Amino acid sequence: MTISSVIDTADRVVATTYKRFPVVFTRGQGCRLYDETGKEYTDFIAGIAVCSLGHAHPGIASVIAEQAATLIHTSNLYYTVPQVELADWLTSHSFADRVFFGNSGAEANEAAIKLARKYFKDNGQPDRYRIVAMEKSFHGRTMATLSATGQEKIKKGFAPVLEGFDFAPFNDIDALRAAIGPDTAAVLLEPIQGEGGIRVPDEGYLPAVRRLCDESGILLIFDEIQTGMGRTGQLFAHTHFSTTPDIMTLAKALGNGLPIGTMLATEKVAAAFGPGAHASTFGGTPLVTAAALEVCRIFDEDDIINKCNRIGKYFKEKLDELKSRHDLIRDVRGRGLLLGMRLKVEAAPVVQACLENGFLINGVQEKILRFAPPLIVSRPEIDALIDCLDDIFSR
Image (cartoon, rainbow, N blue to C red; front, top):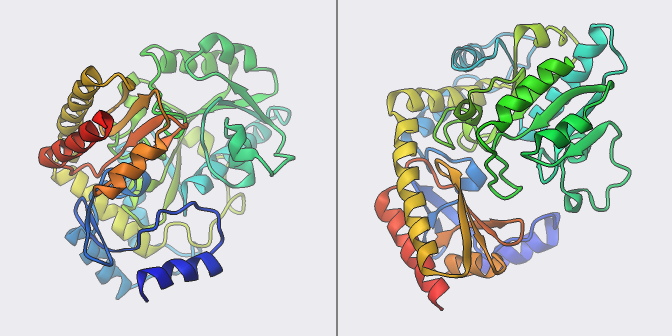
């Protein structure tokens, strides 16, 4: 197919749920993507914080090929080695004792919501079922996770949303306290809001949320779908704030492009999920968990998180230097390699100009540029983007 025929056919047969750029990518390597003409693009969004080890990583590709030729699927009626080894790695590297495998971040959050409700029903408090989430949050596009998302634009056209969700402003402990009632089961939040604008809370906020949950006898759920797996310079973002949840969700970077979602929980809470309580046909297949296990091995052996810290600090310094030269930039925010730049103007034209110059970034909340490159991004690649942005802002 030619580029025009690919786009024309897609516009005719694919659901129009995405506003796509007129680019057809055919291959990737490291931090680079290539379209059908061979034009090179440096990827600073990584499939929305997914391909943290870059495109076509040879180690991951080799594991996928070997596993595909060995065993792809059995269902969760049986044990498989990659799934068990991945669950063991995740629990040994986190607060959690148990892991549930699904296929996406939304599915992981669905599991977390169900577990919180089931936990209180099993413990004789069936009236505790409500979840307090944050304004400007994003937890998914299914009906439950959409209902838990604190952005009205995400919910538009789908009313009535599911009952049982309340909202409080992010980073406001007094407002959260007021939102918690006798029927509250859990607080659900992203340690750093991604789609909400790369919003980093005050240092004392998450510890205060933990104390409030303990005082109220409710559960704390951290959505680490975008922030987890080293993205912010720690394996999980909540460790920046020395705060431990009862339940955590992961997805995105865990599979480096393969679909996986996980819900992790303490033994006490996870006990509410007995046989038949929840399930996923494709959750944790041998193929996907073998790839994710290789991702975890690379993180351990290649010191990826420390590298992310170093290069993230450099990237933020360069963005701050840009801010000092251009009045269009309001502020720079974020941790590690989840960074944002808030503008005085709409972000979309800047995103488009970067695309035309061979750089992939994206915008959130209308006026914020989001940068979430592969964690293997180099200083020269960052310098080239900074030069491009400098030229765009100058014009």
